Structures are given as structure tokens and as C-alpha cells.
Image (cartoon, helix red, strand yellow):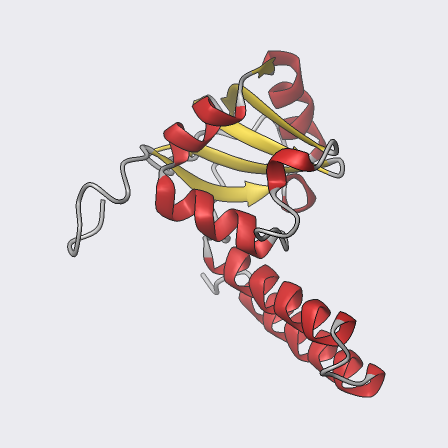
Length: 165
């Protein structure tokens, strides 16, 4: 919930990661528990603010709403021993866990890894979506698009650096 308007962010599930940033074992465990849910249920679980940010980050708008994209599915399951909901967009899972908790990994090589990723990854995705939209509307040249892509990737890579012990 936000301090400005507690009713606006009513979701109890918070973004923790995508399948790309997870382990094979954790994703296999999640997929073994997955059950389909409706878009309405998914949106209610993550709350209006995250739902809006996620749609924007994935490049959806009123001209191409997420409801019309057949590449998107909504599910519930268990991720690292914590109840979760996730959206599968073009075979990429965007995972939200209850209160943003992350439990023990299914990967035996990882004892108890902290979560290095946060909703900031969605902000970086939003930057990428904006750059693509500007390029498609011919308000950005191909060279400017490449520069933007390099800047975004540098930000992503620096945000994924593991903290020092």
C-alpha cells in the first residue's frame, strides 16, 4: 500500500523476478505447481499500481491492450516455497510472491540466496518500451535506438551485480 493513497495499491503480491533471472530448478518447481487463473484475479492479487506498471513495462497501451494479446497467460503456484502469481508473456514468466517474500531455492547448490532483483527491473523494461515506441513512431533514429539499448543493458547489468560479502 502506498502512503499517498492506501486504496490504490491493494495487492499483496509483489514482483520478485522473472524466469530469466531464476534457476532451472526453481522454474521447474514453479511449473509443477502452476494453475491457470483469470486476468482479473491476477490483477487483483498484484494491485492496481503494479498491474499498470507491468502493462506499461511490457509495452501495452490503449491501442494494444494486454487483454488482446494471446501470448499472455496468468497463473498461480509456489515459487521458492512461497505462494505466487505470475504472468507468462511470450514464454517469459514475471513472478510476484506473497508480500515479496523469497524462500529457499530448489537448487541444492544455492543455500539461501537473497533476491537481487526488484521492481526496478520493470522500470528498466519501461525505458526499453518507451525507446521502442519512439523508434516505431520515427521520433528516434536507429543509432539513437542502439545507444538507448546499450544504456539500458548497462543499467540492467550493473543492477544485477551481486553484493560484496
